[in-house]
Structures are given as C-alpha cells and as structure tokens.
Image (cartoon, rainbow, N blue to C red; front, side):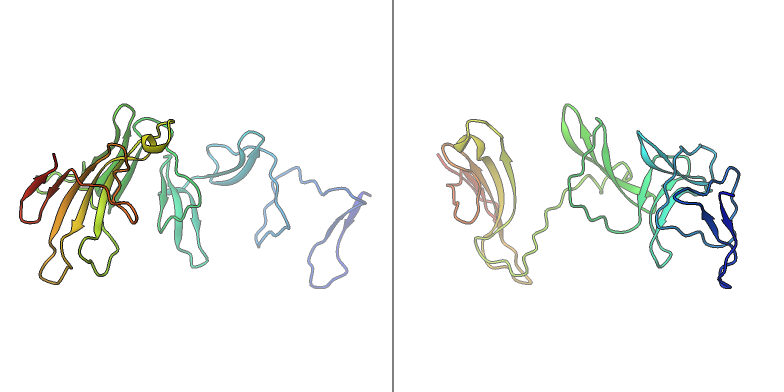
Length: 239
C-alpha cells in the first residue's frame, strides 16, 4: 500500500493521500465533471495541433496555449464574459477588443511590418515600415479620391492664445558631436496670430532652420524664423 483512498470527512467524496512525500500519478485520461482546483498546475509536455483546448510546456517555449474553435483558437475574457483578446482560427492574428495600455516599447521586427487600423473589417489605415524609406501612411481601404492619406496633429489646448504654437514638426539628428549638432535642425510650426474665437482661428506657418542654434520653437527657445506664411497668404522670407 503506497497511500490511502477514502475520506473521514462526510463533505469530501474522494480523498487521495500519497504516502510520505510521494505524488499521485495518473497514467490514463482523467475526466473531471466538476471544477478541478489546485494551488499551481505545471504541465510537463507540449500540446498538439489538433488539441481543442490544451495547456502545455516546453523548455524552449515555456507556457503554451493551444485551441481550436470555429471563429477563434484562443480567447481571453474578463469577469463579465467579455472578449479581451483572441487569436483568429488558423491564423497568427491577435485581436484586441479594448484599449491597449503598455509600459514598454512596441517593436516590429520585420521590414514591411505595419500597424493597421480598421472599422468593421474595412476602410483600413496602415502605418507601415519600409526598410529603405522609413514610415509610410497608407489608406488602402479608402478608394474615393476625396479621402487621401491624412495625418492630423491635434493640440489639447482649450483656449488658444496669440503667439502660441498649435503643433509642430521637428527635424532632429543623433549626431555624436553633441551640442548644436544633436539639437533640432529645422522645424515647421503652426502658430496662432491672435486669440481664437468661435468665428476666427488666424494661424501662420513658421519655418525655422538652425545655423548655430536649435530650430525648435518652445518655451525658453525662440529662434529667428527663416520664413513665415501668414493667415492672409503673405509670405515673409528672411535674408
């Protein structure tokens, strides 16, 4: 006898007690019709492609979840039975159903990787990485000529005052020389010409180019503009 089967507690239907520090080994399929609980569960083998719902482990991959459903293979739900994320059946597509909060970096490792935004599976907008070109904004889902790719900069300013920057595009290098070489080399700013009202939003575009200074227009930094285009269409060029 290596252990005992039974229970002295009327509320426990079956109690398996191994002798000493041994373990209970099950060498065939164990079918539990109620809940199976444990302090920890440590699988020691891989899953298979045909598994309907399996948890596995390998030394190289760690924890493995494998599933097989008609619309999803693996899903994670919250305590309200709402989908949080899923893997579409037979694909490597990971779908998120709410906001994604991240504490670290998002890294896309392959050329041609893209972040794609969709609404109801159509009208996609892609932010794509091209190895020799950088980032490309594409709108393959919008075929109407009135919906070209558009990049919007929205400032969270509730009261726009005169001479305040509304948005900017800065051009910066990582030159190891430091100083001016590593500061903003050029900048395009949208600047309010007067306080905004419900009937007026006069704005000028200010172009700054570095010579021996930062070209960034910011608090405590007011470089001399090289060119300005006023809200009235007047172009002023320095030099």
